[in-house]
Image (cartoon, rainbow, N blue to C red; front, side):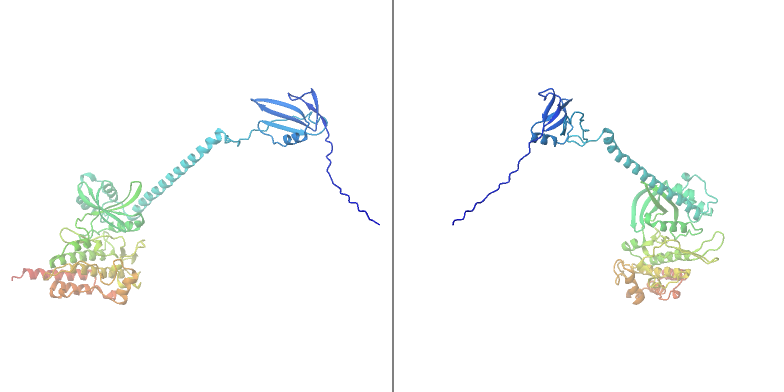
Length: 500
């Protein structure tokens, strides 16, 4: 018996429903019939044509056409709104969207906005510039006020000279100032008048402190030391000490005036002194040699200046005792007559015996390392004792004496100029370098053998050794050194005057 198998294949097909048509309001040029039309979707539209608004209403008979049109987003030129339902577009009104300011070709900025964008940065720049100018002016004004306050602090303006400065020479003014009670310089009103009449001619020296210029005042040469702004305390201290009563001495640099002046929109600190064309002892010894008389003349003049600094003069017109603290050949100037004068009192210390007041100033700087005494290098100095500072000066004076003696000719022999300890420390020695040589090894500058064949150099070498004792209290005083050098000088004069 045969079996029969039947297979049925069922194919599922999607049957689209018959689209429903709606009656829509029809208005405009596209309407074939007036007022009404049938379609799957109704629409209302607004189109901008040649600047004119064209309103239309109607229907889409083809579903896909209506679907694509109705999904098109509105634009500034055309908008279409669709709906489904009987006369659903009857009460639909459409409006064009507001034109986007960020549309292509239009940055979207109004004229006021653009103007503000341009003007605002300019205004801000002007305001900042004005503020900066006001700040700088205020700073400058405060500096000038500080100068005035300092003048009141370190000066006594009693008995100011009111003579016509233009008719006087510096010598006349300085002679008059000796009786004014105004210190070693001119009265302050005259100082500032002189300072503003000086013409700077050439720069003759530079250093850490600033510059030294040769200037002219009414045809007379003067030296103008211009301090850098960071060294204001040295300028103030030197000005303060130079205005001490009875400081004037032939072996101390002659002080004329001090002023804080404004030049080229910057504040300059000026110290005006006598001008010495031969320059510093350091410069002079590198170029020139000395005979025994010249050696003694220089040594005696430096010791005289140092003795005058160290001594206190009592009385209403007296002076305090002063220690230099930075004595070296670069801070000693050479006169035409072969004598020297001590300069640069920016680190000086003052002492008043009657009140036992020690005025060390307000300057954090220290002296020159090459010339520092052992007690300064190992920090064992009695900082509250004025005698300690005087003994530091004596140590440095011994080194200056050694520099002078090396350049003194004896039996036709002389050494080249070298700074102290040139053979044991580098050109710019550190504290540690000097401490090792002076404190630990206790070395001293070498005394050449040829000195001992010359009586003057022999006496000077003995004198300088007494300035270099490790124990500060064993060193000579400036007055004893001056007296000893005077004796040596007298002996030399006698030996020259004896008939051969």
